[in-house]
Length: 142
Ligand SMILES: Cc1cc2nc3c(=O)[nH]c(=O)nc-3n(C[C@H](O)[C@H](O)[C@H](O)COP(=O)(O)OP(=O)(O)OC[C@H]3O[C@@H](n4cnc5c(N)ncnc54)[C@H](O)[C@@H]3O)c2cc1C
Image (cartoon, rainbow, N blue to C red; front, side, top):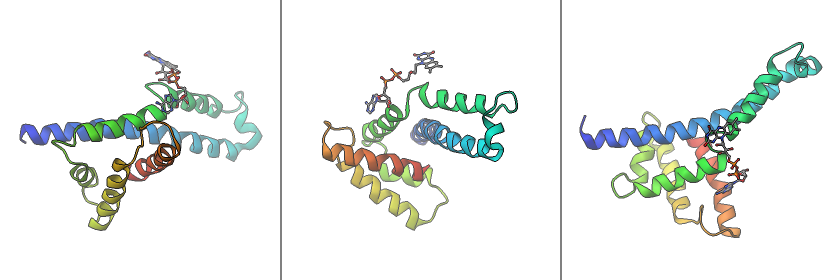
């Protein structure tokens, strides 16, 4: 493996670690809520089940090591920062290795569009709209 390929792989790893933290904690809260609902009233009783404790832990996990908005911002900055030696299109194709060309093209078009927009720009209607799209874009990419 060349040093250049290794550098790209390390970048992929960094972004995937950030993404899994955002996605796993988000899904974790939904799954815990569903698990609690199976036991209904008993599900929220700590004397009966450990689910309330795990639910609290998921909420803490969403916050520490930086909250969701911080990590979403970081990924946007990272992709822009490395674009001189690792194009956004190459990054998407690499992390989606094995997906269909159609799928890769769809994500590339969305990413290209979002990178032109003020996702982390000065707060205003355009930046809020772009940031609202950035969040589900990364969720589906993951
Ligand atoms: C149990 C626990 C242990 C921790 N341990 C450590 C530790 O060992 N070392 C350490 O350094 N820290 C630690 N932390 C701190 C943790 O990393 C911070 O709490 C976390 O990063 C959130 O930062 P904050 O509380 O300052 O919230 P803020 O950054 O003030 O965020 C408040 C709200 O504003 C939003 N927000 C903030 N900035 C932006 C932005 N740029 N764009 C959009 N929205 C934004 C956030 O989404 C959030 O909803 C720990 C936290 C917990 C809960």
